[in-house]
Amino acid sequence: MRKHAISSETKLFIFSIFYGLFYVNYIDLVVPGSNVPGYHFWLAITYFIPFITIIFTWGIEKWRLVISLGLTASLMNDLFYYPISLVLFGKSPDLINWYLFQLGLKSFERAWTFNAGFVTFPITSILMGTAIYLRIALIIGLTISRRLNVHFNWRTRNINRPMTKTVVTERITFKACEQ
Image 1 (spheres, helix red, strand yellow):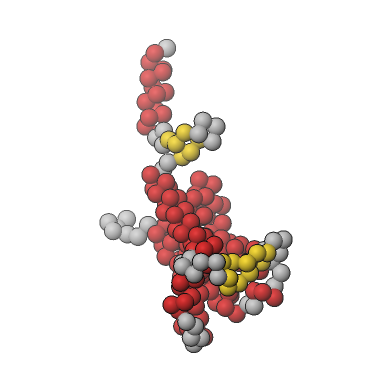
Image 2 (cartoon, helix red, strand yellow):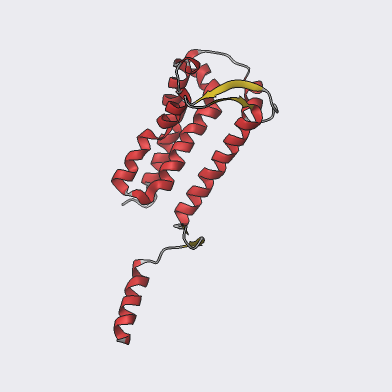
């Protein structure tokens, strides 16, 4: 293996960025979401669908990676929807006002309605900004915990690192010597 090779997980994050920027944004720009029942529910599935296969190939312990990749794709959709519309279709929106709304700086101004089919509600600037900042925090938290190999034990509510194979081997050897 080469010394400074890019890891598979880094390649997946790069793919997630391009997937969200071009594929998801293209669908979101072409499909009139307000006319499709449950559109945002299906859009959320679209964010995660290419990454679910990671769990089948690398195992359930990669769930944090899958969540991070799907959230990254969703961020690319929410942060670059209008710039991509400019690149792909030549639409020229007011990017400054749009980013002010997206980042939560336009208070309770409403721009669109979230439609998951079973629930709909208006999206305000504060709600949109909060959702963006929470996703960024989740991606960072999941990535750090994945890299540190930290696990949360739901029964004891403790955060710990799993034992390595050498520790398990040493304990087994130690117990065998005691008997």
